[in-house]
Length: 400
Image (tube, rainbow, N blue to C red):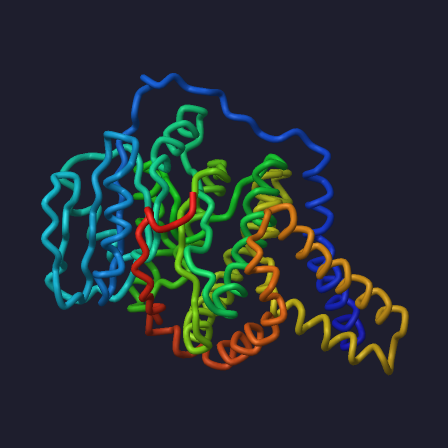
């Protein structure tokens, strides 16, 4: 039994180490998905842009400013000010400020509150975190994808700050995920994963997600929903929706700048992975037995472990194999080299900023904080563990 587990564990680790590199090679060989152009006077779908602010309203003001500068007409911004000490007065009819009478303490509850207070029906819902910034063509680009038949579109999140080692390491992970989990599967005929913000989803589908069993069970049990992005993309793909990836539609995102922020944020993210793993495994199995390529490939990404856990597992097995199996040791070392080289290739293909390349030496520090986060998973069960953001940068201050 132990021997069987030993070999099975090697198979899984080797697969996850080599799988991204295989996909990167494949995507170089297939034609890219292309959008049909739409005329300038094409129908504009109506968007509800929901911003979920928690205890800090000031960080959301630059985002609102960037949305009000959109080269687009039909949208309404809904700002949910959950447990915020002050409520801003914004004199623009396109902005609706919602101040819940009681603390919600949950992104899902804030989204539900916003939808319950819509001033009109909207065709599509766009979700933003308060620290985001949107380029002025964002809604116009969403509209083009919708005209091409997509009901869900994920924008490309990118760093708005690269001012510390931790911010650069965080940005490295985002660049890697954008390419491996969004660009590659989308162009291989599957779906991009949801990033947690910067996604536009058809309203009926989004409401279905909020009313899904996975969400309602957690809320009824008094649990904090921390894996809403994973639940959303599983729900969409399971219902036959292809999630498009809009690589040119940029949503800027504040990266963590301090060790404590990394630990707090990753505690929530790692907990979300383990909380959703059983649903992801069932999702993958359904894709296999139904011969559904979209669900199968997407299912693999749903169960794909956090990178630091994968690397720790590989190094742990390699240390064990030094004494027991030199052939498996060789395979692991070779796979780790391929895995690491693929990360560098992904950064190159994504044209990563110079600051990211210069800060690669800090990744071990970032991994160390994630190990600490792994030891604190219980905290995420009843606490949303929000990440504090402080960078009040406007869209006009960012390079074009």
